[in-house]
Image 1 (cartoon, rainbow, N blue to C red):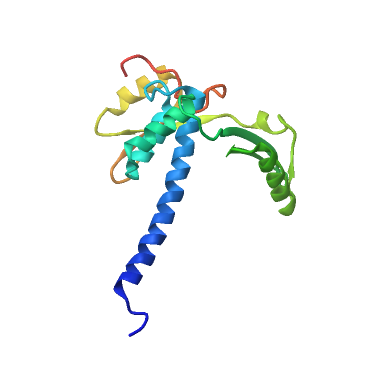
Image 2: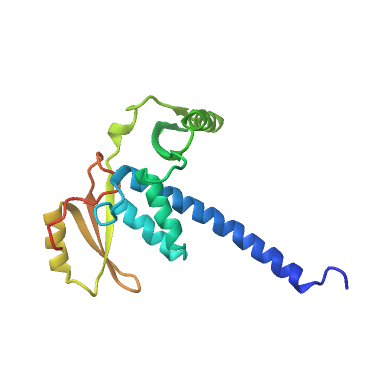
Length: 195
């Protein structure tokens, strides 16, 4: 009966699940740290941080881990320094590409991306080479049961939305597209107070 140990099978499954969970936790914690560094440690004033914290809570991350990541981002605790860099280039066929990366070592990331571009027949461009072709936009989804379509459209247009569209999914959702300022990535468009 060798190889039929029940504990051995459970141990392998748990080990694999723990590795996947650890990778996911690390990714979310990095996002929380960078969001806190760029926009401050208050989730009420930093939409990117709020979204990162919500995604952490969805995967049952302990509150202490979230708090430590925010403190590392604001500089209250020492830790690794992550920075966000945008690279531009052209993919095969002349397709313009913008890549936003989160890295702790910009000297390693640039050459790796350049190698990847060259390997697949593209090339990296200088800063500003393709940025003029892109416009930053955001999508905000709202539960269709909580607000009427006319009220949502009115509030969305006041806040600077470009379009509003109702999707026919189960459950029904209303989506509105909004323009977001490129100077403040991760923050929502100006929003009328109390709405």
